[in-house]
Length: 234
Ligand code: NDP
Image 1 (cartoon, protein in one colour):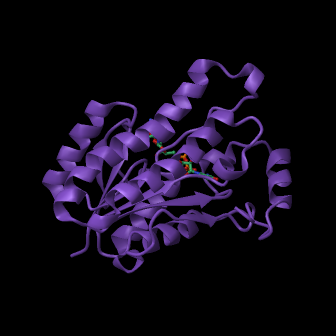
Image 2 (cartoon, helix red, strand yellow):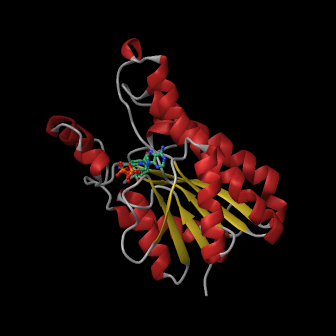
């Protein structure tokens, strides 16, 4: 009957593709949203990952509905781009709070059940820019790089209990986030991607499917790029 899965930000974009894919594999899949409701066929819980009380309440609902979370996909994230000289402390902290501290909040809450069950899968959605850096995205790149150190620490702390923590680092994916980029910036990006195209959200979901499977039990602390070769060498 599959695993109990929670995907943060699974109401749209990459998170939704991941949630649908895992549901198709026969898992019980819940998604967080911030008021939009859940797409049909998925169990939705409202939670902003910057609010620890909302996170706790969402986990309680998921546990009642489908049992303790066995697979956590920490996907919720946002950007707030500008050059360093113009970036306010508030802008830096807002992005780190959602992307990195948000991942900490949900992972800490999920670890309880995983430790009890002596089985678990953490998959953190980072980004190619967490490894390469990105002009105008110091806050975002720092938050995404932080996920690597965070996941690897979990791998070391929890690895002996059949719990793995891995990172997927997507390149450019067709979603609202990239649709918002200006046309000339999109052309520039495509010119630097060896595969010559954007990824589809389903291609990110396929990597998550593998890392959250039983078969991937010996893959721990890995960073899997799904970026069409954009970050080659990382
Ligand atoms: P979208 O902007 O399409 O969706 C973002 C998702 O995150 C939404 O579900 C949104 O919820 C949720 N979210 C944002 N902030 C919070 C918060 N504070 N609490 C809870 N949920 C929140 O993004 P993508 O699908 O493109 O991106 C998904 C992940 O993949 C992100 O972590 C992103 O950084 C990463 N990524 C994306 C790439 C791309 O090319 N698109 C490339 C590399 C990485 P709501 O609907 O309520 O706003």
